[in-house]
Image (cartoon, rainbow, N blue to C red; front, side):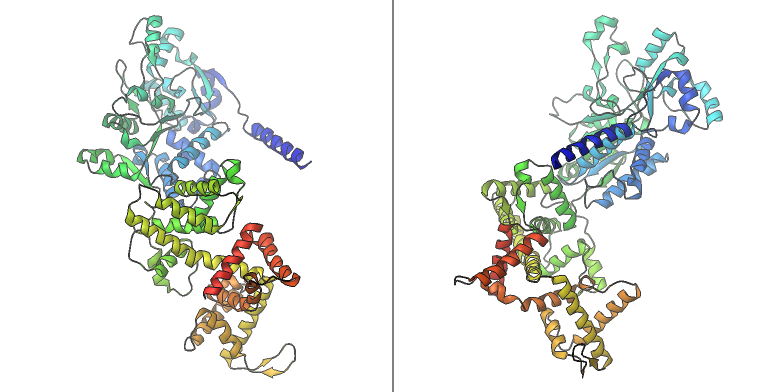
Length: 639
């Protein structure tokens, strides 16, 4: 029944999508186009490619930072996305930025290609809306604007009447059609609505480099089609030209250049001239006007080689370069892994990963992306937490800001998401169980590092040290916290009660006043033994207790003034102290896990209850829950 409901829901959503994107097809002469399309809204009819892409970005809401264009697809690279959006905003305004090639620069598997793909998909979808309606000369190989047909001496009148400028000339093909079929009467030239489609080679072109020795400019600008020469009788006839080049497909939209710095220099000069002058020159024809946005991407190794050649300086001046580094926020990195896993084969998706497997892996990846330094483990761990926007209470604000500051090389090297997913794949293949623990994943990463011939021995040792740091400083804390909470029927409730008791006792101690016991109604002094038992769990010294208590009360008062509840999440250190204090009360249950004696039914029931809460409330399965309890028991034995 549920499957039938889901199937119907999917069919309904597909029908709804079709209805929403059912575009109105339009065709007619230039006369009708001017009357029916241009006159009501002239500015929409003269949009440049940059303006069209900017309108698409605004349509999706991405310009305001909360749109659907990049949502659930790109994580942790918001600054780069903002710079891309700013580029199109500036280019759409008519500034010089629009005469520059946009180059995305970053490490492999960092999101450059995905960013371009999302822009292309956004253009395709936008062209099917009323706001994104686009029109071209029917049959034109470069789907150019019908307004190119308006003679130059009449364009001033056009500007006076409608307040817009016409840029561009008819392509050689349309000139020939105009003379041969319509005897020069441009008002009778056919016009149609066009829809951007990468597969249909309309408004989106893609060029990927191949062997430089065989690469030919014809891949970009076309060549004579010998099969048509016999038909039209002249090699110089535009109808005998193959208009299959990528720059023609991209006209009115976007040209993606993959690994652009691997192409010959003559390719680059052609592209940069196209960007600046909006035209290309091919043999036999005058300049061909093309309006398109060129968006290229390349990796750092190619870019550094390009920089070393002095003759490339002029080319660099005509590019807007935006770095797309790896994210340094391990929460966002884990979201990337989750997305990649969800797109993988069922055999991969169906394997259960314990709740910290991806986050621990992401912490390790982040450590490899920080600039090499001699920082101690504690400082590195704090830096990782700060990049993840986590509070580090024992760190002065100035020191926190210093650690949070990125160096120019941060995020430009290190482990890629692809490396991580490959390691996970190997772990799944080698495991018979349909469940992987965090330790399984960390060991798989260690194996991948040791067996990768591309990584030099010094870096291997450092990265394996980062795995150890990840386990000791992050995973150990997370898994202990889960098990601690699972030892209680309602950890949050008991922890909040303990926190409130601590606050009451601290306030009384600081005010030097007597407390009335809520149960016996007897008056007593603040329970200093209880306060110190909590504080000692996070190594607050006797001499430092006063300042710590004052800070806690100050934060509690701040929360009260903001009409917020002061909870465990309000103070990271106190959170750890309360958790450890409560845990001491349930430590005996964990000791039973590792007991060599045969447990009785009561003990089995207690252990089973903890495992069940780990499964029901904390994201484990039966296998990983048992492994987590065994692991935490081992940690306790070592303390």
